[in-house]
Length: 214
Image (tube, rainbow, N blue to C red; front, top):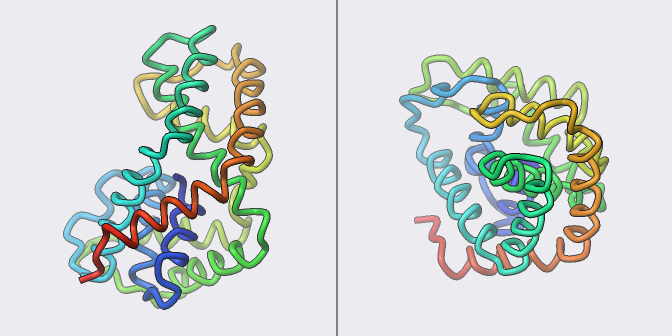
């Protein structure tokens, strides 16, 4: 999942989730957007740390759903027609997560809830206790507030983000393949939209049965 879906999963898991928990559920993604790797070093906000654990548990539950595995495998095979195998693996993982955010734009209230959390982060309502410099994450929250969350329901925007994500790894994609990558993303998005709500519900139910807030 990407940060929009992570936030919504936390809301569905517990509608009374604390602000720190909600922040923790997506803070890894905000850190990645900031471009820094060690921004959270020293964090000792217990609620946020639980949110981070929830983030990890969410990824495990979501990534192991049969229909999600099937989509990722399908994307991998399509990418491998014109990309090296290792790049295809990374592209299918990241691409699937970006496209899954598409389903969240169907409900305006989901985005409104996300923006409230981002506003609270930007306004200093979230305490990053123990973190030497939380400013990059706060700045990302501010940027998202000003510009809105990325419209990954547009496959072209999702493809551009996929290029940006992989450019930071050992498996970047040459821009010569953009149209091919876009076609894979378009085909995969239609499949994800069909199983989106079911996958969210199954993920949340798995977490309610297996993740403890204590």
